[in-house]
Image 1 (tube, rainbow, N blue to C red):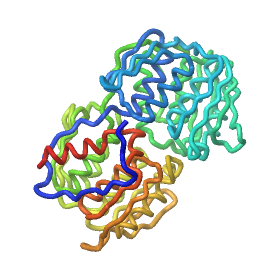
Image 2: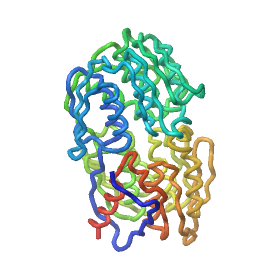
Image 3: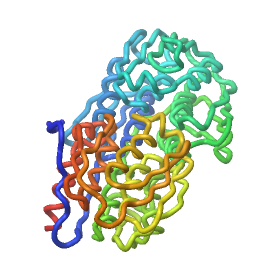
Image 4: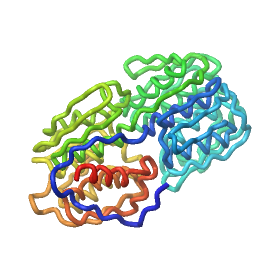
Length: 434
């Protein structure tokens, strides 16, 4: 992984607006889902275009600790997995999962299908992130899982004896990762399982992505309006699987076009994508950008920006990017229905509000979102941006520095969680446009 200084000052964009194309690395969400499913499958799988980041390395290391043969070719962006056919080789393992929420939630469900005792833990922030709803659902399906400290958060111990299946209720308003973890594990339950959702399900496109990966590897889950899911006993089959570029990562470069008034083409992402975050381009279009959509690419051209009132529940990983774009729009922007992002790597609503205020914005922090009023022209000054060990804070607020002199990002290396080469790609795009 690249080595970064403790702080990085962003140079404002000078000269002509950019006209460039970029292909961002593979999707973290797809890579980690495909790793789980391939590990449980019968036979070998090869994941091409796979992301190499802290989060995916955490997942690879955990699968190896469970006895799964995983070969990670980082330079070739390829991961080869010899599936265990639903029988975890290790009867005991301790998995250290840093601050990777997907890894912890997905692996907690996966190990419940095995036979043995498994301990899962993470960083201090991970020990604040809720997992009790997943534990409760697993226990209702025949597992024996517990929060070791009684907090409803990690560390977690699973005394596994396989999953019986049956019926489970899952809260929908905290994290869709609970549901995704259950869904991927349930083809290996002994009997069919029905899951019903309590309340409104957040981040539905991520659940749709989970179902798509399961189907690509041979399972046949069904869903009814994202309120009920039925999973039948089956076996995943190993296969060749191409990972799409990461749509959440692409949002930074779409936003760059919006902020600078330039044109940026995202290669490899288009109308065929199964990732919900490609819809970030739709919001930019409503704000005044021109968007051209093709099957394998999206092109965004910036224009005079206006504020919007938008429900971002379905694409909540792009909230921080949108918040920074709002700094440069005419009028206020309201972001709604994203209260669940308070439980991410940091309380993202509070963090966004605090850092936007440093840049001169007036921000009303709501329980489930934000109202952002940009500063008057010339009222934005230099600022040192705290990133809260949150990769998306660093990448989003770097965009502000393209227009505002003196923006410094603390702990720029935190981008390694999902996009280790972000700063290099940003620099390369600058050079290609000069």
